[in-house]
Amino acid sequence: MSEAQSGTVTLLEVAPRDGFQSISDPLPTGEKILIIEDLVAAGVTRMELGSFVSPKAIPQMGDMREIAAHFKGRSGCRMSVLVPNAKGASLALEAGYPDLVFVVSVSAAHNMNNVRQTVAQSLDQLRAIVFEAGEEGAGLRVDLATSFDCPFDGTVPLDDVRRVFAEAFSIAPGAEFALCDTTGRADPITVAKRFQTVMAEAPDDTVWAFHGHDTFGMGVANALYAYNAGVTIIEGAAAGLGGCPFAPGATGNTATEDLHFAFEQGGIATGIDREKLLKAADRIAGLPGGKTASHLRIVPRERAA
Amino acid sequence: MSEAQSGTVTLLEVAPRDGFQSISDPLPTGEKILIIEDLVAAGVTRMELGSFVSPKAIPQMGDMREIAAHFKGRSGCRMSVLVPNAKGASLALEAGYPDLVFVVSVSAAHNMNNVRQTVAQSLDQLRAIVFEAGEEGAGLRVDLATSFDCPFDGTVPLDDVRRVFAEAFSIAPGAEFALCDTTGRADPITVAKRFQTVMAEAPDDTVWAFHGHDTFGMGVANALYAYNAGVTIIEGAAAGLGGCPFAPGATGNTATEDLHFAFEQGGIATGIDREKLLKAADRIAGLPGGKTASHLRIVPRERAA
Image 1 (tube, chains in turn red, green):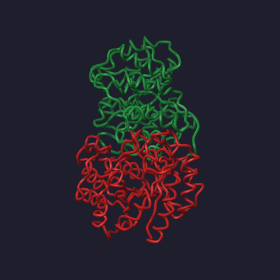
Image 2: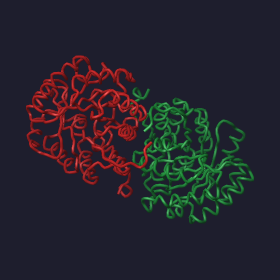
Image 3: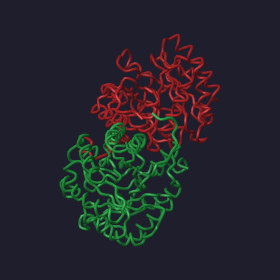
Image 4: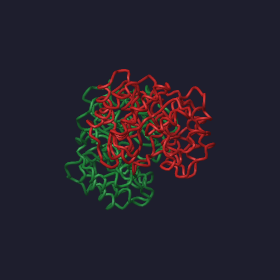
């Protein structure tokens, strides 16, 4: 256990990617851009804007080129897109995205449901992406989905996480890596333990991220335990938007506002302005069918001031 | 940060006290007893059954004698009652309760609203209670309410917590002590820090408890951080029932099921059977106006199995 802490953490915003895909009717591009602009204005320095997937699978992501064009040349916030395969990576690089996020699930069943590939096929795709990203000088993160629990197969063996990480690392040793709690079923102590195990098998300068959901109420605690294990990038979604369409029962990402509250009140700086973040979250919560999962907004306003 | 942990924690159940008082129409005594029996059957070994307060202030607690009579002589679960003053303590001891919980707020404003006394007056009451409990051989815990945040005055200075603890400890050196996050506004790092500070000023064998609410989504993380600081008793309420009637805006206690999930999945034994606990929580959630704050029940059932 730490004493009172000091330091910094990077809150990586995934509402435009993990969140927007959970809204059944695609949002107008202009509305998306307003939200992204709000988040940038709040001080968000890393954001996943969307994914380059088939519009047939996820129609909400059909406007990734228009969004790229709007933000082209913008500095201050590193904007990434998720790609499930080499084709998506090529399209993302063509559109001008400087940062790619490749996703592969540790669980075979989830990988097949999520990207219609075996894990080995996904890793072949990663090999091609590393080559192309290298040529283009693009950043790369590898998201290891279902690093704790799989919606189809239950608890994912730690040895499977170690094996898939080792293979991915051998292909993309310069990438950032994320262990993802896709279903929100991980518990804090296990989150810390799995990070410690996998981090011990990688060079010290590897950059790590944690992607979590608040499905079982562990979202904030999981994030803090990941941070204490040495993870410097914590993913969240403003208003707690999100939920993998291929992970039945998973609720939203941990609310960025809740993470902000936990870290900032504890003396760990995020660089994000709380009031502006809440403004962005309110806009998201006001979307058709939207609601906030932010505890700062659920609680009566006079006590949240 | 800990490695994978092992060990045990005591989850002290407060639904019958902090929870039932939040239900506007007093429950029939028989219904209360069924719930308490369910919780005992689940393996709960510490429970607050209610409080000895004026039925005018909290009419939900008018049947504390009948409940005591029902459980008289029962072993396996230490049953306590909250008392705001020496008169309540006398009545509780007369009724046969073997364990008293005395509450005093660190914040003057909350103490006046909660028990209509100054902090100094409350400490005088504690002096009288220690004497009487000693004569009767009763156990005693001192709850330091608003040890982090006050619904009226905001952040409570740490020095105030140290001072009120020092005074209470000098009066009741053999008692257990709880720092209470009455409003749910504490953050995990601050919880750990305050416990570490106050624990350093007490003998090593002092027994500590943490009482928390999930108002701002920090409930589980706060509990884990308290545990990591050395707290062995964590309070929760099945179904997340509760909310201090004199702390505007505070929502329910952290759900015992969520605490159970976090600790047990992390390898820290609670001695409580999960399915039986969920059964008790479901009964509570089914009360008039009741609903569950348990994430294990909010999530679609097939994923909570």
